[in-house]
Structure formats: structure tokens, C-alpha cells
Image (cartoon, rainbow, N blue to C red; front, side, top):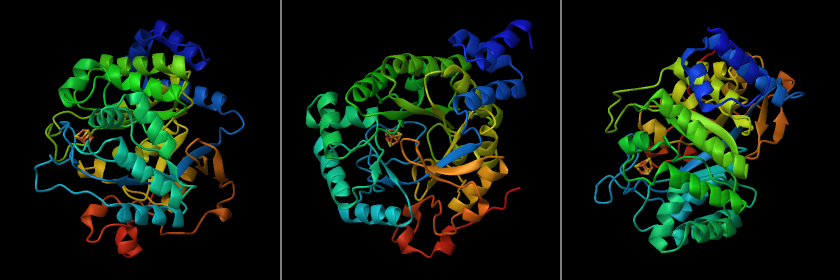
Length: 401
Ligand code: SF4
């Protein structure tokens, strides 16, 4: 590694802010292990006293409809409004899924769906109010700037009003989906009908100002350049300097099946690990970096904990979006705990706001409920939902280590 790059890495490891240009240099040319070691140093310092812990959450993605007018090219989930493949879930079905989540120790739901041409603010108000009335403890960590832009347009209100109303109805925080790639060229290439990256950030900034915090994602591997990846980080960091409202950064990788991009480009595992490390070094103002096992695989998820990540995401009781595009990795609670332990960390179940709910210092205290499984596609199972099928049909444990 050139002396200049080594000096930048040392500065970053010591906690000094690095520029986007320096981040790009490191991303391109720093040796992988040196990059990971620097990022791990930063993580350990940030979590001094709890650096031996890695967190996870138990949640459920609830997909309310696949109808979408936005037709993103990387998406294998949506159906155009006139397609014969459309579906919508009714409130009874959604409440049943919430009940199962609570029963299995889940603390959060991620309400996720297409941009339905008829779903305005009123639809989400009704859903969130009904969910909170029935399950007040369930955290609604859902939607994002894209959905806000769409529902505000359908209802003829401003994004501010839309956010205030869905917050009053029960929304706790925004998930960071829809960020995709924020720089214009890369975003337009894969999501030409979505709002611009600037607009996505503007709406998130409004939300943070109204007391609705969020996470922020990045989709890697759809043909974006290294410069565009780092520019995505810069755009997020600039907003975070003003709001402090992004709780976590979550890069994940594009899945190639069943979508218009047809997998012509994809991010490699090493690119992913480099991004985790760069994110930890670059984001001196974002607390949490999440490793995504769902799209990259469990072993890369484990490795990410040594490259700056402090969180391994969720045991998702249901997921239909990235699995539609070919993500085949699944996990269950016992395996998630094992993955973290085998990485040399103590597992801790966390809340949406990253408080430790249950720290499993002693393996003897590990939970034994093997019903808490990641079920990748409830729509693929007749009747849908974990309550509709025997657990053994859903659970396929891959031995690790
Ligand atoms: S990613 Fe979201 S907005 Fe884009 S087509 Fe899929 S469901 Fe619609």
C-alpha cells in the first residue's frame, strides 16, 4: 500500500474524518485485511465496553401489496396494476401476521410494498392505527421516502403532512429502503420512475426534523461505479451532519433473478466487505453498520462483523422482496445466535433503537424456541404465513462451522 494511503488509513482508524476522495482511494486500493482491521478498530472504540457484543433483531416483513407503478429494473417483486399477478393483503391477514410476530418474540414489523396507485395517506393511517390498537408494543419500522412521495401525491398533500399523519397513526421510524443508489446516473439507470436521490434525502431530512428517525440502505451491484458508491456515502453523511437521524447504514447486494437487469452485473463478496469497512471509516456520524446476511450469505455476514459491522440485521419471520430476486439465504434464531458466537461475539437481541433487550453472555441461557425461523416467501406457501404450515416445512438449518 502506498505510504500516503497507509497514512490515511491510520488517520481514519484514529477517528479522524476522511474525505470522499480519500475514501475512494482506500476503497479501491487498500489491502482488504488492513481495511478491515482499521474499521474494526473504529467499531471497538465506538462500542468500548460492549465491543464483544453483536446484535440482531427479530422482525417480520409484511408485504401489503405487490402492485406498483414504479417498475424498478432490479425489482422482482412488483406487478404492474393491470397484470394478472397482482395481490393485496387485507387487514385481517395483516393483523394475523402481527399476532404471529408478537407470539414468536418479534419486536418490529417492516411494512413493505409497491407504490399502489390507489394507496394514499389514508390507507397507511388506517393500517397503522389498527396495528397499534391491537399490538401497542409492536414497533412499526416501515416505509421510506419513496412511499411518502407516492402517498403524498395520491392524497394531494405535502410530504410533511403525510409524515405527520402516519406518525400520529402509529409509525415509529422509517426503514431506509428505496435509497438504492442515490447519485443520479446510477439511480436513473435502475429506477427511472423513482424520485431523485436528492429528493429521497430531502424527504428523509424532513422526517428527521419531524422526529421520525430512520435507517439508510445502499443497493450494490447494479452497474454503478466505485465513484458512485462513495458519492452515495457522501450524500448520506452530509444530511446526517445536519439531522443525526440515520441510526444505521445497511449496504446490501443486488440479486439477479427475475428482473429486467438480468444479473448482468453483481457486487462480489469482497466488494461488499470493503464497503462495510469503508462505511465504518467514513461514517463518523452514523452509529450502526449492519452486515446483510440475506443477500450475501451467512459466512460473509459473519466476516462483516470483523470489518466494522456491529449488527447482523434480523431473523426475518417473513421476507418476499429480495427472495423474489433470488436471495436464497435464510436463518433462524438459533442459527443467528450460533453465527454470532462462531464469529467470536456475544449475541444480543436488540430493539429497533438498538437497546440490548437480551444479552446472551452464557450459552446456557440461549433461547430454545426453534419456531423462530426466517421464512423467505409466505406467498409461495398455500395459505401463507408461518401459522399456516408446520415449522419443519419452513426450517432448514445449514450447519455452520
Ligand atoms: S423496488 Fe419498490 S418501487 Fe421499485 S418496482 Fe419494486 S416495489 Fe416498486
